[in-house]
Image 1 (cartoon, rainbow, N blue to C red):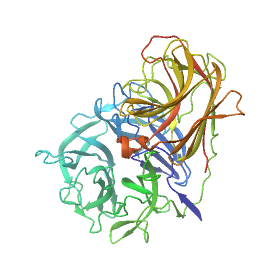
Image 2: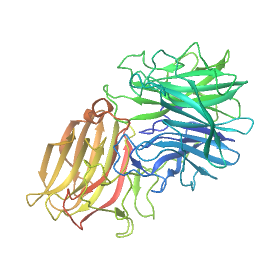
Image 3: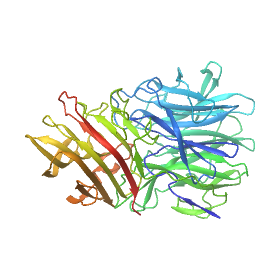
Image 4: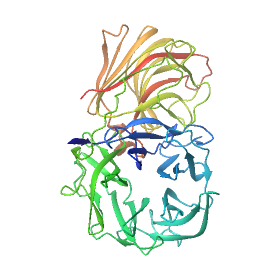
Length: 515
């Protein structure tokens, strides 16, 4: 028997939505201010996942101009119906709720169909047995918001030919608890003659949970499960290593086995830097209600799994730049400018052009990164960079937001080439360590041991010096920095406000877990 190893995908991949098509499973997640938007993954066993593309990979689909790190794309829902894949989501910063479609899950996906009258966030789709389609969403209390999070879940028929809402909208549930806050992430399912509405409640923090209700009619009245919430970690205390559990989606296999994907956060020393990740749990049905992880009732990092394991070929830990396109796991902040980088100007290198924008700006800086996947890792690169003007810089950055990040950079400062570690806290730079170096090829390496980072450098890739050890990274956690995102780590270059034609060449970029 195979094992579920949680999270099923490591790193900042929150709000997972899943659908089954024959023997195949597909999963999509939120991306907020990162581009491309909404990665899509494929699996045959729910354990081993491979990214097969990004659904929102054109600016015509995704406008992220000026958005904060925790704005942009919220809570997508992925569904399949009559030969078409549907992705519905919210751009909370530009344009509200929309649908894109594709004939194949890897794309290409259409430009958005914007849904007039689809108020609120966290949209979902439901396809009934009679061929009708429905929009399910979360919106503010139409009678007036009495407190922060006073929202409700609602449903309305959707015409798939015109991609327009038709008929009347119906409030269907407000959640399981009195004065519930943020009844979000609604999904509708049909089983044994009942419509089941599953939602998240309690906000995205420690009180997060999953609740469910059912009705014989799609428009209600919905009765809550007497055992709500059906899963939460709110009762396990602040030091339990998995928290923020919620925002689930159900899936049934061809063998009539049920599972739930949901988000949760792993912590290290009480802090969460990796963001909210997709976890998997078994589900059974008793007395007409789902039971999550029967006999256990909470998420586990490892548990037995009934499906046959379907291995996915592991990817290299080191990214090389000989192809015509970046690996699909790389992301940018907001919409990348056309002249941001080149894979052809120097063979085998990623050439990153210095931009005036910095990581502090709500703009598109010269930054290309991947998600932090664990708390014990090593990231390294070999960079060739010669800063010419004052404040020109390039190197590696660990990014939580524009106000909270660390930069390990070579910079021109008062005519000297300086290698420095800078932590940005609440938008203000704090110098941790610096040393004068020679220009040219430079090997940079960061090793994370829990929350402590050690910074290495060298000129030959064999012999390394330590610039600073045991730099605590808890300021890059959700608990300190806030928001909905986890950390990314990547290659960075900036002229810090000064016009320049300079660039930095990165020969490779390596990230690997060390446990």
